[in-house]
Amino acid sequence: MSENVLSGRYLVAGGAGFIGSHVCETLLNRNCEVVAVDNFVTGSPANIKTLLGNKNFTFIEQDIVRPLSISGPVTGIFHLASPASPVDYAKLPIETLHVGALGSDQILKLALEKRASILVASTSEVYGDPLEHPQKETYWGNVNTIGPRGCYDESKRYMEALTMAYHRVHQLSTRIVRIFNTYGPRMRVNDGRVVPNFCMQALAGEPVTVYGKGDQTRSFCYVDDMVDGLLRLMASSYFKPVNIGNPLEMSILQFARKIIELCASKSTIQYLPLPEDDPKIRRPDISLAQELLDWRPQIGLDEGLQRTVNYFKSQRSHL
Ligand code: NAD
Ligand code: UDP
Image: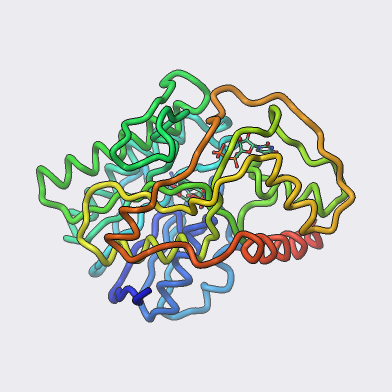
């Protein structure tokens, strides 16, 4: 795959989060300047600790729901700020709706002021509990607006609509990425998502908690592949939504067994109730990203999970 070329000064909203901190790091490695903004609601100062000494990196602690003033030019904005784990957004439903609606509006206004390109991070959750499989960008979704996931799904659907409105009314240079389940180092150990839960449980030799029968499916993308996709999309001029994710689909029970094996763990499996509205199947159709961006995942599941397990091992010593 050809290298995507980005240069200039980038703002990363949600830059102290899991994916955001990897975006910052990759941009810095490619000699871009980076300004990260984050309020640490689900992110962590530890994620950007190694970046703080870099002369091309600036950090601003702020809630992006409030007006944001950035001095100097901005070439592009990556808007990744939002709680993303179902456990996080169930605890923070109002903050989640506000950042998707009001925070996105502030960030889009800033892009307009700076004449910057902006990439907004949407999600496979806009497809809800999908009735089409695999999910293509043309599918409109099956979302329960008033269920426990509604705060997240609808905030992202609103953000997509708002982004298209700025594009149509102001000719703003916009990109919309629909991110599918992504994993890797710097996920919070206790964010409640399946990868940290299973890795931490398997490493501790505790029961691995499978919700429902574990026959629901997901498709997991390693974070380096995701960041490569986000940068390629930013470097393009395509303004409609693009799925980025790994199409390798598996059941959650298979996934639990894989992690137990990779951790060489003696953990057993404990079945717990399936959360309300948990999507039964999910797999991205990535033909658009392949055609448009010449992008496809490069890191195999075993390799990505091994790196992730090593990260969680290192985190256990801080507990
Ligand atoms: P994360 O929780 O690790 O990162 C989100 C970051 O945004 C955190 O650092 C948080 O503190 C910050 N943030 C939240 N609200 C904010 C606000 N009001 N002001 C400033 N900062 C704020 O989650 P992540 O997994 O890195 O997700 C990043 C983005 O990608 C999110 O927008 C999420 O919806 C999207 N996404 C992620 C996945 C995934 O599998 N990781 C899947 C689909 C979509
Ligand atoms: N899950 C599970 N056990 C856990 C955490 C999650 O079985 O300890 C399941 C969850 O029900 C869902 C899948 O794993 O079907 C992925 O959950 P996650 O919270 O990572 O993200 P989602 O894809 O649901 O947004």
